Length: 225
Image (cartoon, rainbow, N blue to C red):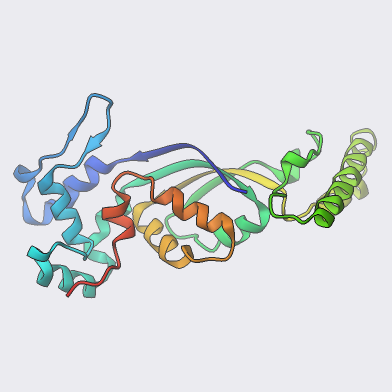
């Protein structure tokens, strides 16, 4: 199970303006904000963005191929397009997500300090892929955790607290407010799009819903003749 809430995409205007700095071509910028406050890339700006990220149209094949070989430096404007979201996912998924430490930031709910303040319920865990037997086992663990939590709230015993921490399954869901950028999302998308964990498939589906994801993220590594 994985859930995305409060997704925001920020700084696209500034990133595109900066992309024009090397050529002093600001006068060609044609992007604008629509009536809903969304930043809409004009034809000129979108064409530039696609060329810089190394997968240009047929009219710019040679330049696109050259930039793609040069690596991500020429598309560094993508590092300035920021994405923030509240992501709720199981601990076993967060362990893999923590591989991505570059250009990502996250503030999480506290397991160490707040685990005892809320009743343990089945909804607190990712159980959507459990077998019948697995679900029964999880329910027994939740019951044991809840009994220990109630005991700890009375005793404040460190032994009880450790029982909670060390018995807590990796299917326990944690919410983090995450900040990434489009460049880091490119790396994540192509590394994880065919992963066996459903949560990664859902993460890549979420990436595809971001503004101009198809042009700036998903198409990045398509071959250029």
